[in-house]
Length: 263
Picture 1 (tube, rainbow, N blue to C red):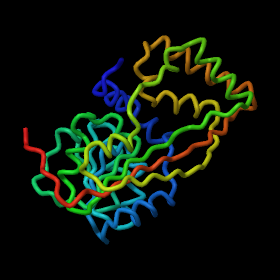
Picture 2 (cartoon, helix red, strand yellow):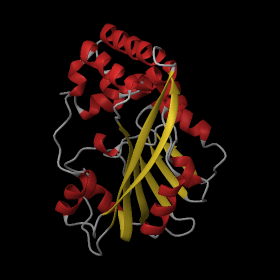
Picture 3 (spheres, rainbow, N blue to C red):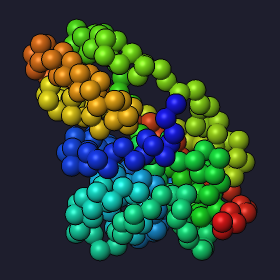
């Protein structure tokens, strides 16, 4: 199994493709995060793994002060470019694990499509220690819903031929259980936001090229898989509709949480 450290390094090599093709997030989700978290006007938000800013910009437009942590220098450079119009947004080339902040004063910690790459032994406890009492963590991500269409079946046949190992998921406790198990947060609130988008054959293959499991395949195998995916979509009208569900887990920090000791 590839390590989290390996997987989170893979995106930086395709930063421009990542910026162009990775999906964004519904505005309704941001509305709910703001409401449920109680983040004050101009509050301080820290984002874990901002990528090129797909989620960041939705919060930045609402006037929040943001510190965005992104370990990939190429991704961070594009994020700075995309967020240049927001004076209160800062992008740091740093992992969440390595980031140092002295006070427990953050209003909100967010992680968009990134928390599965954070060290599970320390991530939630560190977030709790950085939040003010009543501050919140919001973890969300896009999950494609596979349907039974002809094009989807043809795409899955491409995976079965070229990379059957990518069908093997990771066994991990549900996020809500992991949050509850820390005893550092109040009740977890969960929500789902269905939406869809359409990709051309080239764009869908490009999107898959930005996925860490695909990036970690041997180069020849990856090229064969991406070409098979491209041909599958092209042979069924040249486009594919992907139904997404954006899943949100949000929890407020309990009143008394011990801070993590600096390493």
